[in-house]
Length: 139
Image (tube, rainbow, N blue to C red; front, side, top):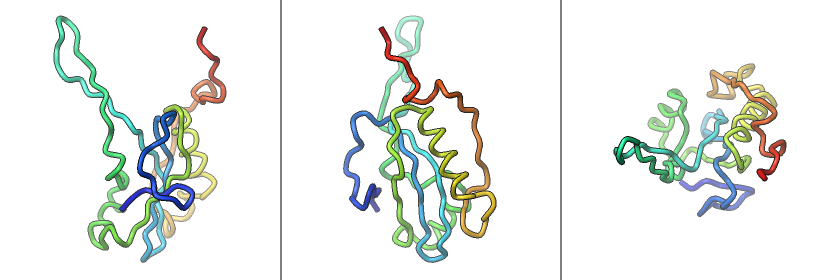
């Protein structure tokens, strides 16, 4: 199953994106999960002199379904074919991902409607300086 964005399948992420906010839908029960995923991951590979060398690799975003155990159990039970994955927002920064994920979760009322949403936890400490729209260009 591929990710969808604005009704189109996603083959590659936009170059400016560092992550995305998404929704996974169970087509049988109608329940949904709203989350975020980063496109890259940092791995400390080996020592180079006195320092660890960091290697940046693509994350598992192409095959990712979410982190919620109940959602993953339903995917195992019903099969991937009964779920859809949609990207709601491409994000430039980690701060953008955190903010937009929380915003979507609140707008959808995910904690207020457990019969409709798998989400059982939301939250985050987000400062306005974390948002790309508020970042000042470096000189």
